[in-house]
Length: 362
Image 1 (cartoon, one colour):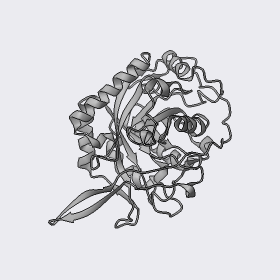
Image 2 (cartoon, rainbow, N blue to C red):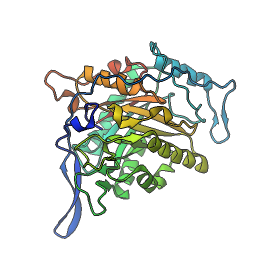
Image 3 (cartoon, rainbow, N blue to C red):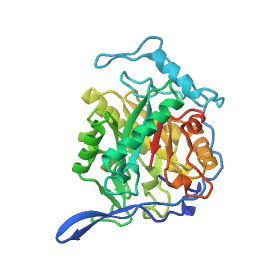
């Protein structure tokens, strides 16, 4: 999820890989970070088949929801036009399910800090103490507000709740579920700034059918949303970090259907589902991904590297194969790893068409 790879997974060079392991010290079992960074190489510039041209479905009347009042359809359409300004591809806005009332996107732009509390190297969320981390997030939010004054910014914490592993573990699944106390800690930190919480899932040798239900008590909370990472979905049986994983539309559909059910059964406002992507094979059969008024899907370009590489990846694998909304990831360290490279500014990211509505910092 943090690396740019060739369009062929077997050519991916990924080292060292972020790993959490359980060890015992003085009779006490603790989690230890072995390593927490990864490398990658450039995405192929090969273009995929273009999606069919389509427009957003616009109902004639305002959509009303008894639980949270009417959806401002005029504002919704205005924001879609704002994000698509200058996009002549005809692929976006995509034909999609009109959202239920209470939808966050595209009324607000989400700016999220990503990471894991056990590691200072897996992302900025766990790199600094909470006070310092929130201070830095607030500083970034002000930059995005200045870059686009027409779209309010919603802060978020994007926490890796199931992390892929370099070793099989007791059940041979090459993934580790974080304890509830850690997720609870993230919820408490987020509450300090009224931030959303995203729980991210890296399934390893497991699958979304087994992993997503373990988070249900959190996903029933109105401020908790979900992320899935195909990079670490190892359907070929190769160890995480050796090749780039993949998910099919069927995997995404299971997750979106699951979230839609939770929303309907618990009378919630729409959930957001972030799907990470930086190569074509990471998501197969994207046209078969189902849309629901209860779920807003974000395809997040999370490759790292120099600006031109990030632009190319966004165009080829996100904007070129749209599902609903788009996201863009920025890396404080990996984006500047190459000599002479730099991290993109909010204004530069917003120049992409469509303009990303979900921003993630690692």
